[in-house]
Length: 109
Length: 226
Image 1 (cartoon, rainbow over the protein chains, first blue to last red):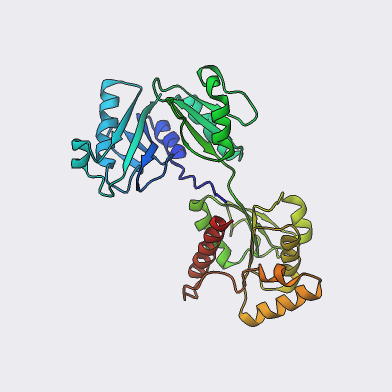
Image 2 (cartoon, chains in turn orange, brown):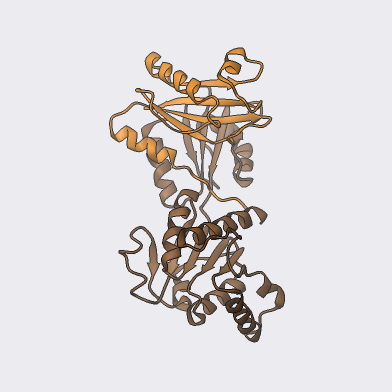
């Protein structure tokens, strides 16, 4: 049986929007191998770089924050980012677990 | 995602409706899918796949597509009998674990709103209280009063309705007596042995939050066994 372990990130997103912040929603959409967070895990980022929630065990969060800030700056609606062991820049960020994940970021507008 | 969609998602969540969020990863379009309905627009091509994701309660990208499906299921219902000190900590844990809690206690001084500001406390005897709560085999019962007058009818109801988790607070001796009463009431050994008593996993702690933790840990572990 499964419980709905809803981490209430979307509820928090609403609060941030109410407080007139720009919010980007990041969601784990695919995982390969051993990845710390399951598909559907979420994180939100505002224009100041504050974030809540998680898409990994702390391995790629800073990179995701950076991507979210660029999305706001360039005013783009969405982007898919893959963090793979074979991807050098992602390796620098360090998905220490050796897994691979795809994260989808989108502006809430 | 549009703010309107976000608001609709939050509304569906608070009304405990099951639904899925469909997202087109190419253009960022998203919409809410309700089971039994046909997905709209560009998502309609993937109606079968979306339904399958929904039925298996899975999240993921539909194969050979750019469509992401995230399903939302109803939280598990947990009924606590006894609006006691331990129940206050259970409410705290259940909040972050997203269990849906109802509390039954016929004793008005325990069942006060001041003690449980955010939870529905039914100030009735279990028999009448269960008429107000919809239950099924995915419901859990945590009996905390260790008063046979209050706990026993609730335990009997939970056994008859095949709740997936039934736990009862009390010492080994209290539990032995409880088992004997249930046997006299006609319950089989298998049924009686399915009750977790004394309740909780062994942590060693004796304080109210520690006992609550040991109960909630057992509840989570049993949830994944079913």
